[in-house]
Image 1 (cartoon, rainbow, N blue to C red):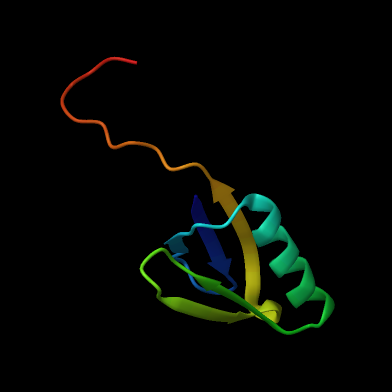
Image 2 (image 1 turned 90 degrees about the vertical axis):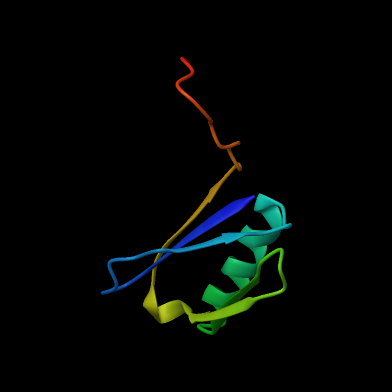
Amino acid sequence: MELHIGIQNIARELTYDVDKTPDEIEQALASAIADNGIFSVEDTKGRRAFIPVTTLAYVSLGEDEPRRVGFGHA
């Protein structure tokens, strides 16, 4: 699953490949927001990010898409 995190006043978003379900991500985010704490995420390579919820602009989930090679038509 691909996770995109937007942070206020930063033009570039953070993108992580995670092994969590959308429900697990939503639960972790809701808990962090309720506590006015820190949203943490770990990617598939074991790297972790800690983002204070007060700086979050958005969190978006999406399915991984296979990379397209060549000039194929949809």
